[in-house]
Amino acid sequence: EPEVTQTPSHQVTQMGQEVILRCVPISNHLYFYWYRQILGQKVEFLVSFYNNEISEKSEIFDDQFSVERPDGSNFTLKIRSTKLEDSAMYFCASSVSANVLTFGAGSRLTVL
Amino acid sequence: TQLLEQSPQFLSIQEGENLTVYCNSSSVFSSLQWYRQEPGEGPVLLVTVVTGGEVKKLKRLTFQFGDARKDSSLHITAAQPGDTGLYLCAGAHAGGTSYGKLTFGQGTILTVHP
Image 1 (spheres, chains in turn green, red):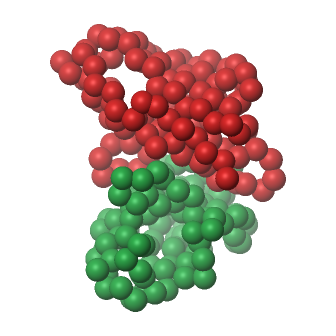
Image 2: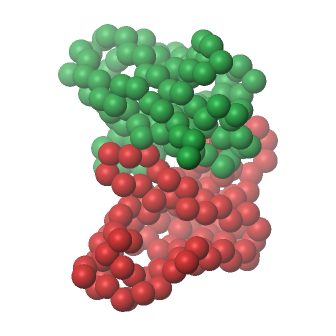
């Protein structure tokens, strides 16, 4: 069964460092998303991406965050200067139509 | 801000019992989805309900979307230890360009004892 692949599975970084989380969505999917889940809290929407541009972003997705689809297969989330509160599980998701999402296994980010 | 309140947060039952998990909101959603999440993995979609009053069945799981599309329930009949896990509801925002912007409930941790 097709799946969304995320790397790395776990990244530990120092506060202030840049982090790039990578995702390979399902190949025929057109919509791409990032969500995050802080430990013990709800899964939260960060951003949606369609037709090579951001469709919508939440208030969490400030200037420190950016997304890119550098080629036909990868979808990345960059955090420019990480803060302690960025520590979370980050989930990539994709869909062939809006609102029916397939999630990846997540990338755990720990900021020290 | 659209909120989705999920209850109960924890549920511990014996094998063979029935249970119901609820998701409630004051907002209307275009669709409501139920996911199951295992430790260390992402949410896995179980079902999507779209029409008010819709009922969908997946083996022993029955999902219902409220008539007003503001609430939903998941009912499990004759629960088995294999049903143990975290269940999440998520509402898709109605209208506009909110592609894939889901609002999640806080989840229900279900434990089924043999």
